[in-house]
Image 1: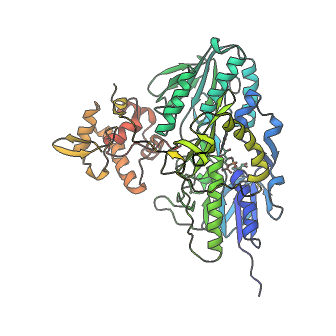
Image 2 (image 1 turned 60 degrees about the vertical axis):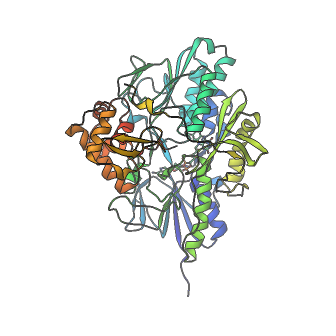
Image 3 (image 1 turned 180 degrees about the vertical axis):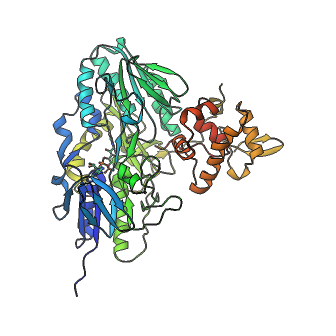
Length: 431
Length: 104
Ligand SMILES: Cc1cc2nc3c(=O)[nH]c(=O)nc-3n(C[C@H](O)[C@H](O)[C@H](O)COP(=O)(O)OP(=O)(O)OC[C@H]3O[C@@H](n4cnc5c(N)ncnc54)[C@H](O)[C@@H]3O)c2cc1C
């Protein structure tokens, strides 16, 4: 008697999808794995932050997707149109139908400047910039090179967005870059955020807030942008504040893939609703259950950072659970929301944040308690060199699915917990 | 945890004054909480507040401003008019819920 091997279909061949395909072949070699993506371009997205400052070249961040995917995977090039969850099949825009037994949605998140009135105007990629796409980052490199001083405004549209520290890093790097080019004195550097501080988590917000202060960055908080007026060169908020700019660097609203919405699997930003410990699809309201669907990486609505490190740690947990499912056992591995992010702070230094669902980023050392060598939430040269070196680790170890020696679960060893933050109640009742 | 006394009831609140136990909340308390931050509740205010309460009960978390807007059909500008400056935070405060997570 022959049995057909289980069919795993992966939507998206970025960080998470590539790792899933490669790891499944290692642990479940008889499985039939198909991966769909719209193109064959794999970018190392953290490099988008460095390109505007000439710290990474375009060639360093761009590779072919196929090169990194286990050849035992069937690769289909096409645009996903929708998931027919009840029929257990996926339909592509060209009409191709792909049946599956298990589905992994790893279609990421993308910047959507079209969602903010006025953002996509004449000045798009000229006076209104972003560094969340390859093209945007390249254009910003050129626009920065032509910048002669004035108001450089770094702006966040709305949360969540991928790599939540990236706009802060951009600000720190811009400060450094402007100094090196003799432009800092002639530039007002402004950081505009919908949050009530530099960052979401209290200890990190305090430390990063200090870093902005030290660099004389003006911070405009609680700013919910309503529109961009490119004629007047101002950002307008819902509460009628205006922030003028000469050069705007915005992080547009980030949204999951539209097919997630069309398939009835998403929340209001098209993120697949999942159980935060297993990444298994968790239907909202009265939608039907589909335990055979999982979402990994930025595509899922996990309440932690949308970051490569989260994709990595959560894929490891998922693979362990998939092996159990394959053997008809219950899933016992649980993802804790672990994220591990380097924060470039300029002047050849960086900080490191390490946190999960329960514990905010704290000060201390990582990964060896009391020793490091990496210092948490404190600037060091070693952190910076590690961040730069990560590009090689990404291409050569992470994507191929080689073990990095980091446990998916966060550890409290070497960290310095703090008491609750000081009273902030006044902030809400000010008017 | 600090406590506060509103309308003769002693309630547990966090450092920012948000109720710790959503079950302590009643509509009368909502009126008082709103008054504390300078808001006079009208029917227009109640629509999003009631949505926050039912959505929190169903989903286990406070909805974001975007979610309130898409689910109730009230545009963001109007929510800013009803709960000036910080609608997401203020609505959560009045509804006796934790402030929405600024998801990292
Ligand atoms: C500027 C910047 C800096 C960053 N810095 C860091 C950092 O320092 N550290 C860190 O950990 N993370 C960082 N990140 C985040 C990290 O790059 C992402 O979190 C990670 O790539 C997410 O992986 P993913 O597989 O979920 O999505 P992606 O890698 O984006 O892959 C999604 C894939 O799905 C495909 N796809 C989408 N929709 C469809 C469709 N309809 N049909 C077919 N294919 C589709 C896309 O083509 C793409 O290949 C940064 C990101 C940016 C933008």
